[in-house]
Length: 531
Image 1 (cartoon, rainbow, N blue to C red):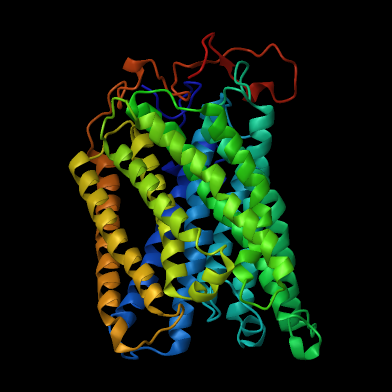
Image 2 (cartoon, rainbow, N blue to C red):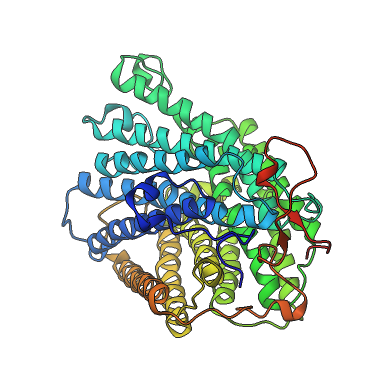
């Protein structure tokens, strides 16, 4: 049975005492901590969304504009920085060493530090609750009074440091701790996705950190980097934020793509189609992601000479994502697909990501962007991309649950979760797209009566999504305690010659013959070619 560690060493539960809870450095423990923290943030961010939808269900002002602004600041910040990023950090921590044959991360203590830095960053953001929007646009974020904005800035600073520590650890682990026999040419596609993601984090996060530092100086020390009346430039913040912000989209999406590339073949009973195309497309996204940020600023008055190159690159970056989609579809085509709950969510990822990608292709077209910029169409597009990533996350949780816990979840309730989540997201986010085409501006907490119907539909969709999430949490907790024991091969992939790389029978613990300082962290691979 492939559970806990790839090297078959028994690992005691870290939650048995407060001491082990706070001092553990094992990669599986850090992965579990990240994952549960992310799920808590998803719940809180979902509550913020529900309160906003209650306000928007009718064109009547029930709360103050400041309260509404705080709600969507917290919702946006939490979903991006406090849920999606740590969710995939958790799965990466748990899976990456197992997939490449390492006992742990290259720097286990720094790995633990990255998580415990993440916690105060969370608290600062939730307690700060500023009314500036999750993008923190200047000059609003400069002139807004109160300590809340400063707490938000410091919270993002700390989370950025934690992300960089984690990314550096992932990168070095892949480069230095692959087991003999695991090469770049055959390592799991999830590892390729993590490799590309880590490089983006290392190069993008310092830019946001610099912008946050300048914003903090403007607010507290009399500088005026972003204050136009004193010679500063408010658009400078947008350049800084989106130079980080659009690569950030791929920081979110690439790990999800990597998991889809691992799980779909195993549940389709078929080798992944186009291994190198998928691996190299991840690296292509890495390089292209830094050349698209200006498409967020096409209506800010930039010259046409500045906008056209970014239009071309933004349209082109759809190509590597399209390569992945076609390869996933080709993998499923002709396969012996087993429609287990993980497969349902992974196919949902493909469908929702296609919708998110197709709706995103409109924005690089400058004349079309004039009409769609700052409308609910942008909100619908972005939510379709994010919900695709969330679908991949849930699919991965369901797939790896037997390996993590040794138990099976209730499949019926898993299907109910999938159906409610799918119905809810289609209702909510398609309504956003329609509202955008009707002319509803984003970030507004009041509107004309003509928009009422689609706001009611969107609110209903959000409620259904929330019901699905509650079902998921109850199913997971109940199954961990009382679920049936997981079988030897829970998904039947081995019957078709597709063993998981992190199965305990794939690696043998043997003294390494390579005399390096971190030999004890490397496992020896059996003599068989990995799938």
